[in-house]
Length: 396
Image (cartoon, rainbow, N blue to C red):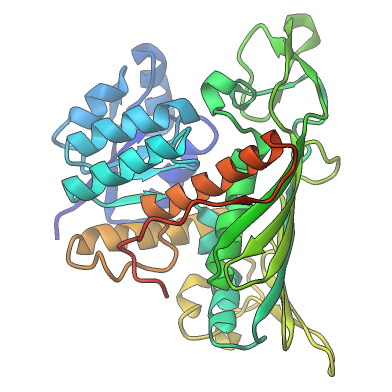
C-alpha cells in the first residue's frame, strides 16, 4: 500500500490537532506545512517536526508529492485553497464551515465530484464513541420516534470587549459568527445522531458585545487584547448569541441555543433527543457518559465501555471501561476513518464510514446556517432550508 503524504495549510489552533491525529495513525506522513510567510512557516515547521515549509499555499497544493491537503486556515481561504487542491488532483480535508456561502460550497462539491477526489469536512464530534452509540441506538428504535431534538453550544471566550480573534472580522470569517463557528457543529451532530434533517428554522440572533478593542498585534484564536497594546475600537455586526426554533423533516420540533458570551461555559456542546419511548442526552464536556431517560423505570447513565456498547460503536472506544477518552481521541477517530476511506477510494465511495461528512453534508449545513440568517433578516419568520444535495455517502 502506498504511504500517503499529507500537506497542512495553516498551523493556528486547529492545525496542530490535524497533525497530532494524523501522526497517531502511524501510516500517513505529514510532509509539508504552508503559511503566508516563508520564514515564519519554516520556524513553525521546525517546531512541529514537519520536513517541508512553503511560503505560499499554492506551492503546497501544486506539489506532486502531496496526496492529501488539510485546510486549517481562516474561513475566507477555504474556498480558494480547496478549489486549487482539487484542480491539482488532491484529496481534501477541510475544517468547517466549508465556505462562506452556499454558492461556494456547491462549487466545491461539484468540482470535487468532477475530479473524482475524496472530500470531507471535519465535523469532529462524530468521532466520539458515545455519539456513535447514540446514533446506532436511535436508528435501531431503542427510544422510539424522536419528537423533540434540542440542545446548546455555549462558550465564554468572547464575553469581554477585549476578547479578539480573526473570527470576529466578517472579511475573514464570513456573514455569521457564532452560528457558523459552533452552531454548525450542533446542527451536523443533531442530524447525524437522529437521522433527521433540519427542514425549517426561526432564528433570533443578537450581538451582546457591540464594540471590541482590536489589539495592535494579532491575538490567538482565544486571545484578548493587552491593555498596553490595545488598538482601535471595532463595531461588531454579527451574532455572538442566538436562539433558534427548529422543525425536522419527520415532524419533530427542536430548539438550539448558541452563544460565545456565556460565562463558565468553555466548550459546552449538548444534544438531547426526546422520543416516544425514551430520551438520550450527550454532553461534550462529560463525553464519556450517555444519559438515557425512561418513563416507567430508573434512568440510566451509560459509561463509555466497549464491552457495553453496540458492536458498530465499539471500534470508536479505544480504551477499556474506566479509561477516559477525550476531545483529541475523538478527532483521531475521525481522522482514522477519513484515511481509511481515502485508502479505499474510489472503490468504497458509496460505503464511507458514518463519521465522514462529505462536501454534500457541509453544503447542507451551510444552507441551514444561511436559512437562519435569512429568518432573522426577515424579522424572525419560519424559513425553509434548501433541500440537501444527494451525497455519494450511503446513509447508515
